[in-house]
Length: 284
Length: 278
Image (cartoon, rainbow over all chains, first blue to last red; front, side, top):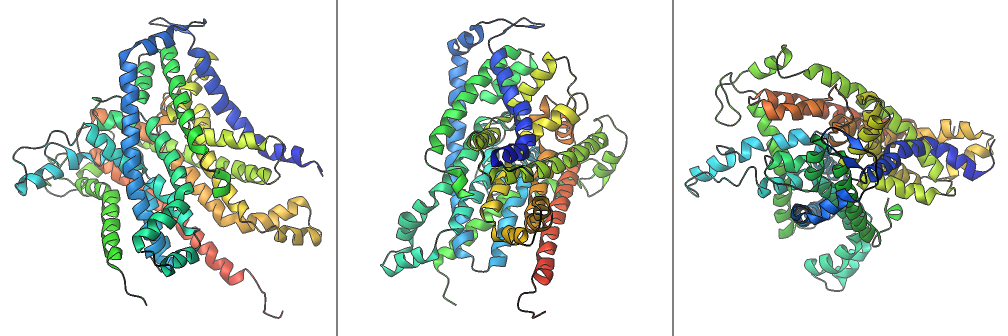
């Protein structure tokens, strides 16, 4: 029997380490390398050149697209936080039966295990020119002509983001709320705090770790996305992910890799900042 | 029982709207997939029929849906088994606080937060450079693991944070070997959580799109096939496919939930003979 816990630990962690080395570290290293290569129309050439980065940082498009990415991330974050917090608060503090609580929580999480693509497709009959939203509004006499901005616009992109990713806020916030010692809330009431005051001064501060974890999920998912923006905007809007995927489809791998490196650095900086506010290992 | 406050009813209404928001669109395409043969992509319903479902089962021009489904199923099962085994081993390893475990932990977090398209691009480039052919069962399989493993491991960390070590000590005191302790004490106790890990492993793989996009090769998985259809199919057949896929997902999720529930019941019945005076 192996006595050394370091040796046993590494042996047990070996499959994990090998998979992450082969499919996480190596691919990233490759992307970083290729980002310094050059490309012609037909092939990529190993070289060391800053050309891709010079082009990237010299182009207006880059800044506009990064700005759009941040805009999507910020709006989606605010909406998912608002909705996610409300839903988690309701489940954690207003539902008294544990069975009902578990059932409602499952109801909220089940869509997470179904296909994102299909959940996006399912907005089409709602938002289209002759879709349910437009025909309802016309029937109610609120508008005369169909609204054009419901589908294939920033609106539909953000709607889909909120639809897909609110769960990532609900789950960690609910998890943290369930661990709040209920006697703290009693104490607040006993000292004369109103429901609102208890919420703002007791529950919100104690829920911060959950909010941070939810924020990490939502920001990284939105910033790294390319398919939601492409599908829900009908290819009319762009974010960084789409910039990368367009380069890929044109076989401009070095240029795609350079954009990917910049995106990766941006995401890691954001996460690095957020991780200063929360110790993930303690929250599990 | 204390009287419900007004905020309870307001929040209940908000919650109900949220559930409607979550499930409404899916239910709508469920209804629309029963469109009549002349029906379009939105309401009104042009008759009710199974036309579009029948269309799915016939040989047609839209692609190889059933082949894609079989591949996604096989890949999902491969990813599921690997995720469970590797996560359990990883979870056991992390309890030992071995040198370097902190760095490995941050690598797991990195695997979770990294934009999926980077994995897709990176793995694609590696296979390209070494002259290997990308295939769903090799490059696609590995790429999906970078998404399912962090979830599996986070669940295992949560499980082992709450694990009572005195069970293991008791087993050791009775002379169990290290392997016997894991096999007969630790694994049975954590079994319900492993079903959760398996659920994540299968469903996240079955629905994964971005990480398989450049790594699946010439044979598409189901999400890739469906996405391909969105660009060139303009009939409700895509709704029919979406409805069937979602039903399949619900079936899988339901099976997992029932299994966990059944295990809990069984444990409550057989778990302990404390106080029975045997």
